[in-house]
Length: 149
Image (cartoon, rainbow, N blue to C red; front, side):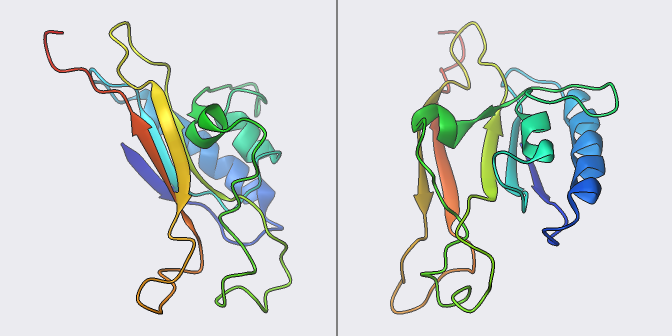
């Protein structure tokens, strides 16, 4: 499992492109019985070059990579905004509502480990009168077969 926080400046896609290239190189070096999971604040919309690269839909400088967007797998066509101006922390921000936080998962294994069962946007309302963050969160439910099954 890897977590990241890419450049927050929305006009710095070129910086995030370099960051996701390094992130992909790091994730490729991992090993284990479970597919890789990369989650975090990408500060980039689903159609951005950097997110398309992580999802295997765009090469960068002759390199490619592929993970699945758990929310898109569980809810194809849904927006899943995690930056939303209904949140008082972002209400005055001129940036429109968008999805910029993700959970990406590698190809599931032969025994089904890593299969996306569901995903959701969470922390999108007050908790005891307080907003948890300026971003809404994302959670995913993945299969994790017991050893030997």
